[in-house]
Image (cartoon, rainbow, N blue to C red):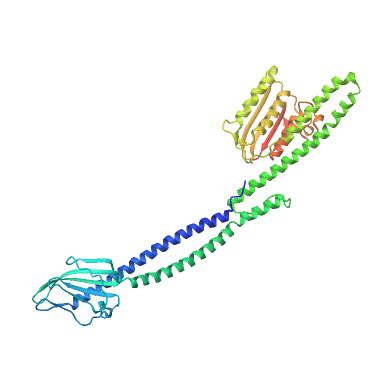
Length: 443
């Protein structure tokens, strides 16, 4: 399967995208909030200017608007300052404009509801302006007049202020973003370092420089390295078993083949000798194949219910040994399950029960239970028992040295139990026959 990129690259890309999106969103929100705040402050100053005009305005006896020559706000007196004011006396049809309007024609607002403030952004020949308008019914000494006060401010100042803030804001956010990206890169390198070490150890294992993963790793990947070591050990045990089986098979077949080769020169004896040697060779091959095919410890095998396996083996043996009318006694909790390959379970239980059935007189029993030590299996019969347990269970006993149908199965069981790191003990049962006790530790 082709590589789809490194985890580090994915995490960095994802983190960078999230960070950029967050900084962009936060920056736009702050910039918008600042612009709104500055805009509100400018309108507040325009409102203050209108109050200033109201304080300075007077009506003479004829109802004519009278304004002072100067104002506390100097920009109202400076032509082209960007701050412009107008007072419309609708009753007299006259308009007063501040000296700052000389040479310009600001778009003053002419209509306003009495007693209500109006704020807006208007376009004029000179650009864009912030406008504050207020309508008032002015009462002089002897006359009243409706007045409309309008103050405009060029948005150039607002744009300059918000622009300076935006440049400062994005400069700081950009620097902070780069610093965070650098920090994330270093943190990811530190956090993913154990994966790099695992990959390095696996390459060393592939090159034959070490046997298994040896380093200490965080809890998140410790289970991975432990299971990887288990797989490596199982594979090496399996390879060793295959090599040994082939070696034993070649060695064990030497004698039968030599007998057959000799019998070729003695035609009268050929049929009997051939049948005998073929039977021996078949037993040898079955024994070695059983040894080579043992699966071993199955940490990754799904839990297997033991009771159904015992039931199927009992039903098969009852048919095979129907002539002996054996009584099979099975004791196994229905809910008991164990992590073991199904083939291994049938190999172990089948060989033990088959061996017991061969030598039993009337009774064969199997008991399976679980305790703190692991899975316990006991198979017993009322036959003649075991004469030489060491010979039967020898790991390297040749198949052609066994009694046909007796020791081969037990030798395979012994090796299979050993591959599961368990133990097999043969003894005499309470019924007077043989008893086999197996203990399998938790995988």
